[in-house]
Structures are given as structure tokens and as C-alpha cells.
Length: 82
Image (cartoon, rainbow, N blue to C red):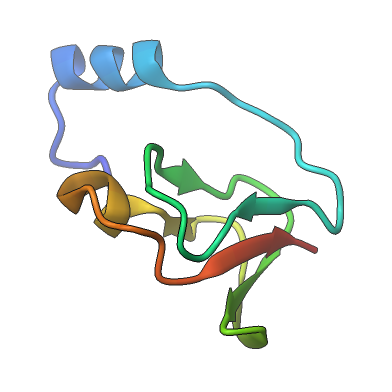
């Protein structure tokens, strides 16, 4: 995802990044909330839940939150750590 970034851009991404551990069952983002962050899964998995139904499971290397972050729209699905 970041292969096209130069060193300065990577340094800025690193500066803006926080690494967190999320316990199983915790909702990371909630459908309908205003998006203010983007997340990349380093390890573990998460379920994508839309209208109460699990529509996908994602794992390491997957990311979410980019659309709401870029367009300042509400979240289209929830993400729950599994």
C-alpha cells in the first residue's frame, strides 16, 4: 500500500500512526459513526458487520476506514475484532 511513498512521506505516516491492540469482541468502528481514522490490521482478524450481519472477515494486511476518512462520510459498516 505504501510502496509508492518516498522517505519523507513514510516518516509523516509513521508520525501520525498509533499501534494499538484490540481485544476480541471489541467494536473498532461502528456503522453510522463519522469516520476520523483509518486502520491497518497487522495481526489478528476482524469481522465486517453491515446492518447486523457479518459480510466479511479480514486479516493481516487488510485495512478499513479509508472511505469515511477521505470523504468525511459516516461509516458504512462496523468492524469487530475477532
